[in-house]
Length: 247
Image (tube, rainbow, N blue to C red):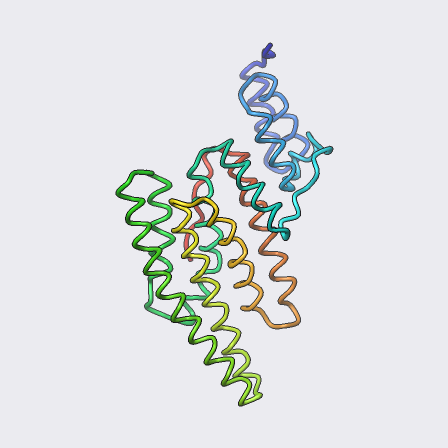
């Protein structure tokens, strides 16, 4: 039986939520009891590390986002709760975060950006026309990715020959661009194959890793994976979560 919760009580809790995870947890508990929030979504958000959700469900084991199978299972579970467009939505966000790595190396080449935008268009209106457009954008991003792979190989060879720091930096930038294009490719591919989202997360983390100096690369990759995990949690917490703005 659903508990009766007054509108005034809910508004009071909502006002307290801005900076207080405990107040947020109290609001969500009240909403769950009133039948206004699906506990399954909050439980999955707890597994994804959301602080307020973990206060409600501390017994939920946290997802290790660095483990491919854990990432796959979390995305699949979220898609069951939120619908089949969810994988493409988060994949586009993840790819968009590392898009600057591509555009810094290939200014004026918008193929990865257009792939991300095509994925988001399909999320907004999952019709056959938008799926076909995403497929075309994916193919264009694949061509960009393949060209970037060749450029990265050439940069590696140049770095090995030169043994200079600037050559190594150029090689790292080339690899980051390749991974960013790969993430964009998988974001568009997720419009018709949800499993592509799993790869988008990996490639985005690789891009963050290779775009950063060696001493900080592991930290950058870990930070990117943590952002990815919390971004998925955001969709579970708020049904009105919108796409990240492309930089």
